[in-house]
Length: 566
Image (cartoon, rainbow, N blue to C red; front, side, top):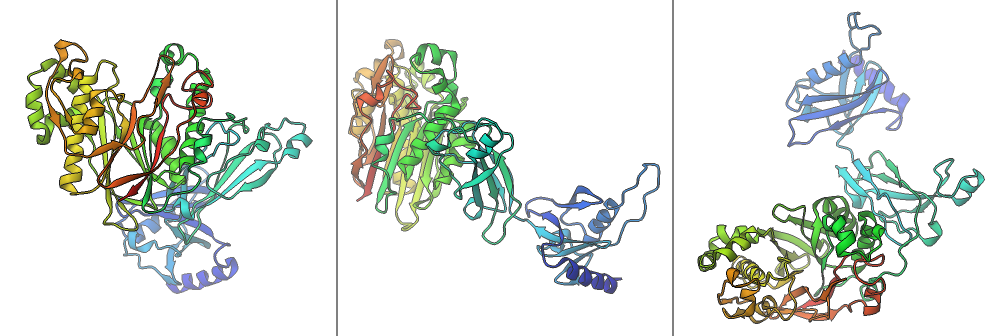
């Protein structure tokens, strides 16, 4: 029987040719999973069989034979199935071999007189998503879920509707009927032009792994290209960041994005930001602006605050990954938003992560035992501190060109309340102690960059404590919320930090407040400031009264500076 099957195989191969004339049997076999899947068309129907990887091949072949039998009536006894054999390099595969061993890429599966080419773990695109709204002048990036493939080796083809196709059909330019498509771009990211307004877009993704290409997947944007936002507050800033930096310069950005969970509330629309056009508070609109703004800064390190959990996974991470940045996310305690640190993968490799919740660390980490004992004398302040959800994200990176160069990047968002100066002092004390532990003990002597929304102006105790290294027990911020919640204590830290961007007039500008709340603190002993990217002009910030606006996606303004290793 093996000889007859081998002769039939040779004949079928001559008829089919290699490899295009054959149907495919796609095998997905992941070593960490107990089962593998075999997908192929049998008797006109697509079948998918799940088999144990340790099972003998003969049993899987018998199951395929049974699946190939199709009776017209359920009461009829099943007809005997066709003979099924698996060949590799022209030789039959031993049916005692396990499925994991037997199903090799390039093998041939013979089912009766039908021949299939086995593709084991071919590049696959399981998911392809595009934004619902696309604006002229703003980059569009797909969200992908690839398996056995990577975006770098995959093919992307963007199409746009041919304008005359819609006109000849008597349709408006954005109408979906009788469309003809013309190739527009072969990059993963596409930025439609003003001339594309009213046209529809489509993307074809062909997954690849550098050696093979898988089945293509296509998706059309829901609606036509819309007019853009016009001039944005960050357009002029992009003129300073047109090129990527090179060693030893590190472009660093810190930015509170304004979480969607706070922007999409009735309180936000009517009380916090009543001056902002409602559509400009919508997630899709704001994230069109955010993607353009962040990608245009060409950052090496990007620390973000108020990042919605779903926004990170569905929007930010896929978009910034296409621009060369990998991201880390830390959720705040009992919240739907948190912190995110992105790093340019051509410049840095992640060594380790040391994230904490500030309140939890105070009670659980022996590092803060002395401070906890002192705080126990002030029960009201202690309770308030422990109730806060604030987190600290700490990541250690090493240079891809010189692994001996490592850097500690911290990112936080401190308590927001105007009368919470005492709590912010406690939070920053815990944060600095933890950063010192990482940068002085776990990785002795590495530089520190500490970014965040510290909710503290330069006149506060928090700022002077970070800058000067000490805070007196008599500082007025210890009684910021009255004597009942006071917690007078002197604190110190050994880090030599300064604000790389100085003290801007404001980094937050809303209807009822403007002030400097955000900082990029850097290690004075190991880092120099190469340049600070200028802030938007006051006219730009107030062109729509305050922030956010149709030209700016957040109530905060990004801080951007180029740092240099000493």
